[in-house]
Length: 355
Image (cartoon, rainbow, N blue to C red; front, top):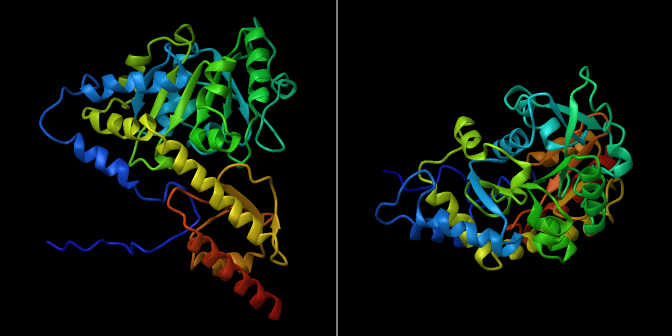
């Protein structure tokens, strides 16, 4: 059997933190969990231990439900928080609205009430654009406000901003779900514990991301308010998100969260984004579009430069009309990666000016 990898292990890019491999400490944790037999479907020792691990970060009331992926975490969370006639208020740019192939609505049976936002962030005032019509049988009933931290546009909410949304939602008898695909990046950037903008301000349910921060696969639904959900265990199985060999998902989260690996990984990714932004701001003809507050950089480039640069470093075009692109950094992005990419960008821009 050929033991050589099928890909170039030196290949690097800025398309997504999902492109990165598995952190070595996570691989070691999977290997440690691999010996012998353990009970399936979450009754294993690793998943049982995981409850106390999450409680260290989110408080004694937290309950963790490992799942395979972020879409599954979001759909199950929102289903558990709603009745069939309920609706979820979210930013127009939210992952649940844009990037989940309609799963929240088609699979989850939810109505999404999307609101345009300038930087991917809701406010109490923006929530009120859709928070109305309670008791009107002709309108889906606003029940959940879903926010993303950090957002799909690379911005982040402050602790006070989330607290204001939660207070406003709860005052109107609505619940708050936090899509935390990059929750670790947000906490690292804010310099606060994970619970500071979740448990401590009254968020009800979290979709906690692991894959983008060094895991092989796996996310966790973290219920902070048990009264906010119903049928979670059944919904997870019904939605095909119950892992039989769950110990291998749970062992990853144990390694990520028992120490400071989650923070080291996220802090490094954020720092590489800052390094990238600082360097490209000096490149004539490149316009950074949004604040860099986590591990994403958005910029506008000439389309011809984008096409040539993508052959050397994979990344995505965010908006075809404006030429805006997105560059993501990850736990394994190096300074050499950033500097090499910036050098390539400068060379392509110089070529463009000569044409």
